[in-house]
Every structure is written in structure tokens, then in C-alpha cells.
Length: 449
Image (cartoon, rainbow, N blue to C red; front, side, top):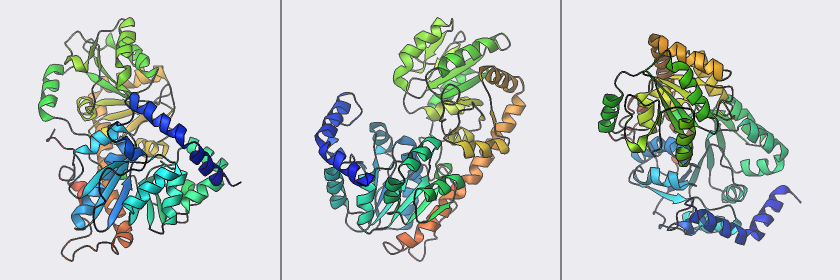
């Protein structure tokens, strides 16, 4: 039996178990109790009249990357409606007030045939714009069978996913067959998508380069800068297990040379903050949690335990170490701190963004460190020579801003799929230089930093 039909049979027979899992996740805050029906394909809203484009981003990062594209499409093509789906509670909260008029949000249905059928029959999208690598066989195969165009945006195939999909070539090819075009983040991603069976591939750049960085409330930012003064500081961003202790040891090693040093640690999962604070204090460090206020002069570690303030932390840090690269592999996206004037460091585990990391290093914007000792040495050098850190930060920002034109290239590429639905009015250009007007295109902006 082909693996797709086996998968379909298992997800059909396992439907009751999937329902139980959803309720379990809901009890643990991982599903929205009020909107749980959406995960089973029951619509939470009526379908807008007229042409509808369905966009999908799995979680916060993917959804935020789609927001500038959604805004541009609605501005350029009056009469178009857009549906954005995501799969996490956090992403739903982030986009709740960020979507422009003409766009609505729903949770993605779980990948069982009955939920998929209900979802597609209700929304009946005229064009699907999928993003990155959130591949669900039942959903993508069913959507492809409807005969409406589908485009993969910002496709990313990690090393681990590449190995997995090579073992299941038949299933991968079945999913990819529904896509009219697959756009990889990098040339390597495009090649891997072709290996998976995508009939047409290209690489126009990383759509996340066009997304504005997370905002920071200007009043809070001013308070933070006043509280921290001119203390030397660095940030360990989106850390995973083991990296917080490593950052604590690095701080202790540097403190003799920089007595007023402040190390900012923002774990990827904020729910770990309480136990992390205890373990860092066990190292003999003085810890202040962001939820408690701003640190005093005696504080060694500021532990970021708040939601939605990553843009604030990045703006406070001239030096940023990307998490999930020192004790684990995978990495976190360095584009946002690159846009916010930070010198970038990461460990050998930056595998999910290998090509992006290579290009940032080639631009003189970043440095890879082999281990804890090398990290301590690198942070020491950048703290001791702030002009060097400033040069790296400037190179990072210029590189990231130069990549921002990806949005215009994608809009041009999507035009043949959109024109039959809603042509651009004659007086409207295809795209204006959005990459040069980030504030205007930022639906999450609170104010100027």
C-alpha cells in the first residue's frame, strides 16, 4: 500500500484519539477552548464573498513573516480577501490585532480527513500561499485536488527534514504535486524541494527579511535604558536547556574584567524561568526577572520572562548570542537582531539557518564560536572593543535591509496567480519600495523606538 493511503487510513481510524489529544492539549493551555472547533474543521467565521487567498504560517515567526505580504496584497488589490491560518495559541494572539481589514484568522484544522474536508468545503480558497515547512499530507493532497493554484513561500527544508523526506519520497512527491510553484528560502532549499518532487522551484530570498522587527514600546524602552545606564551588556536570546547555565558561567568569567556587566538571558520557553532563576542563583549570581521590574546595579542576570518583548531585549543589546546553537542544534533566526543593530554570535549548531548564517558571516556581521571558552573570548573582545561590535552590527543591519526587496520579488512572481482573481487597478503600481518603509508596513508597531 502506498504510504499516503496508509497515512490516510491511520488518521481516519485514529480520529477519536486525535480528538482526545486536542482536549488534552486544551486542558494544558496549548489549544484555545473557545475556538477548539476550528481545529476540527468547523468554521469560526463566514467565508468572505469574492476571491479568497488562503495563507498559512505554522507559528509566530511564520505568521509575522506573512503580515507584510498580506498588507501589500490587500492594499494593491481591492476586493481581495485573505484567510490566515496558524497552528498555535500564541500565534493567534500575536496576529489578533495585527491583521488589516480584509483579512481574518482561523486555526489550521488537524490533519484528519473529516476535519480537512469541512475546512476546504467552507473556505474554498481561490489561491493557497503556504509557508516554510509545515507539511500535512491529508490537507495538502486534498487542497491540491481542488484544482486551484498553490504556491509555497519561504520553503525551508532542514537537514533533519531532508533526511526524513528522502526516506518517504512517495509521500513527499504526492504532497508537492499540488503546488504550482515552490519558492525556497535559499538555493539549497529550492534544490531539496525539487528532490521532494516539486514540479517547479525557484529561490527569491527569505521573506522574513521583509518583515519588520518586533516593536518595543517607546516608553518602556526609555525606562529600560535609563535603568541600565551605560552598563556593558550582552544578550543570550531564545536559549534552550543548558545554554542558560553556560551563559551564567560566561558572565562569571567576564565579571572580573567588566565589574558592572549585565547579562540578559531570554529563554525560548518562558515557563522555564522560575527554575532557571533558581539554578542561576545556585551559581552565585544575582538574578532579576523582568516581570519583577528592571535590575539594580547589583544584578548580574536579567532574566526575560515576559511575552512579546523580544524587540525590547534586542534593542537593549549591542551583542546577541543566538540560542539553540551551543548545547543543541537547530538555531534561531538571526534576522531580527540583525535589523536592530546587534553584533551576532552563535555556536556550531546553527544548522536550520546554515546558508543565512554563512552569508551573514561573509558580510562581516557575525561570528561562529566553537564552544564555551570561545564564546567567552568573543564576548570579551566585543565588550573590550565596542567599535568592533558597532562595525559588525552596522554590517548586519545593512545586509538585512538589502535583503528586504524580497517582498517585491515575491509580489511580482505571484502576479500571474492573482491577476485572474483581482487585477491591480491601473493607477496602482505592482509594488512600492516596501523595504524602505518598514514603519508604514509594520502592523505590529507600537511606536518608533
